[in-house]
Amino acid sequence: MRTNQHHRRIAATLTALTLATAGLTALAPPAALAADGPVPGDTVAKLPISSYSAMVVDSVHERVYITDDRRNQYANQVHVYNFQGQKVGSLPTASAPSGMALSADGGTLHVSQSSGILAFDTVTQERTGFTYTAYDVPCPRDVAFAGGKEWHTETPYLTTECDNRQTWLYGSAGDRSTSTGWNATGRLRLTSGPEVPDRVVMAQARNTGETNPFLTTLDASGDTLVRGPERRFADAEGRGALDMKDVAQSPDGRRIAVADAAYGTRLLDAADLSDAPAGYQPLPEGAVASAVAFSGDGAHVARGAAAAGSTADLLVQPADPAAGTAPLEFAFEGALDGDRVAPRGLGWSKDGSRLFAVTANTTGTEYWLHVIQPPAAQYDSRFTGTLSTTPGQPVVGEPVGIRGRLELDGPAPAEPVRVSAVRHDANGDRKLAPVEVDADGTFTVLDVPSLVGDATYTVSFTGDITHRPAEDTTLAVTVDKAPTTIALTAPAEANKSAGLTITGTLTGRGRALPAGITLSVVRTDRKGTGTLTSAAVAADGTFTINDLPRATGQVTYEVGYAGDALHSGTTASATVRVRL
Image 1 (tube, helix red, strand yellow):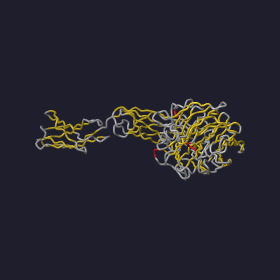
Image 2 (cartoon, rainbow, N blue to C red):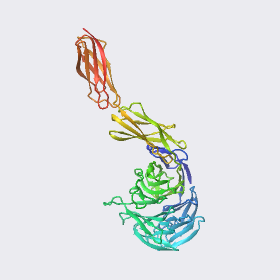
Image 3 (cartoon, rainbow, N blue to C red):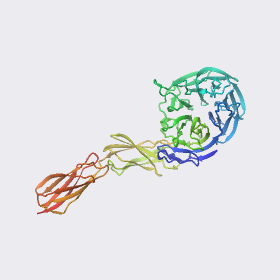
Image 4 (cartoon, rainbow, N blue to C red):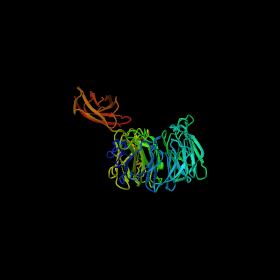
């Protein structure tokens, strides 16, 4: 067992802080780093198993039960860990255990094995019962406890091709199993929990015999199971079929979450299995959903995935998607921690103070138990004062800073948080790069406006697992054209017969001046005012004006640039004394 103290980092910086010698990296949400106090801790224990089947968390007695799933081999025990990640015992079985379920009162752990269903007292760890199954077969069984009864699946074939054979659902009466009559092709995954004591969720795993697997609920409150709503997810063309890896029920029973390897994390209304009004944001690109679990207090949800490298394998966030809080992300990427979250590999303590995650290496031959303590408290955040710009007047093509202040309640942040911003103008919305907030709460979001006219900046802090989101703050500005300047060099005196030469340079701020510019030239003398031949501007901004004055005395030359779409116009003048 090993204990790590997490450090966080901004995902966008791509500079992961490795935890001690481990490969687990805690990634802050892209928008912001969470505050200090408490920093999430991660205790890691290497599991003595070569495959994985199920995990059950007993919050009453602070025990975590884990089973191996070595088909046709002899695992012959359930591994028992405490909430600190230490192995404290094992429950003996006659053959390899697979499924587990805890009774509603937490007093009995039901464990399936090839020859039957075992019952263990969770206080004494002694075996208290045995249910004879219809068949003694090597195929793993799922187990659920609902309606005061134990339920289990049965694949009645002496074969290792368990995933594509017919599976039946059984209940128990005394020490004997009784068929419910429900059956389907492939493995049937059962989900139950004490928070929803009379419901079993049954999901069909993807298999070669069923191209459109189902998800359904079963009411176990009576003597027989009554099926509730059923849903299949493929469209008329067969796209979008369910590839279920895990199912979880919210403690209030209103929502069902599905880790769907073909889709991500589905959030459903338990009443009819329709999509919930608001769903979770997509998993990171390249991550494939593998597990999902609601915290026992209903406040948070954990979403597990299989992802390569530094891509997040675990996201922890508020259970309500409408909260808008960015998730706290974890990446498992080391030989000492595993590379991904195993299917059905997540479980919470009742109070939400600990998250248990089973991770696996890429080949699925080694497993680890992580005991993660995410920060539980959430504090308010807010933008104070009004936004301002620096410099005061934004111009197109030049950097402008949008300045403001973010105030965070709770402990002082261990590292700077970040805010993001969006500029809205006639061309639509443009996301700006997130920026760090200074220790005093001030920040400056940088932008280079690309369009002249009205623009609105909206600055956001989406929150994190420690802070609730702040209400957005906005600033309306008018973006002006970039100014230009003409500098002239002219002689103080000139002879009328010899003529004169004036040189100059046109410069502009912001974007580069367009090619092919010509400048107007106006001459004023004692005979009046007239327009001369325009002056061509070279690529480096220089130009030359040659003239034969028509009169002696003071002659003034005014040179002008009319401006363009991004630059304002400008003029400059020079006066020359002309002699005979």
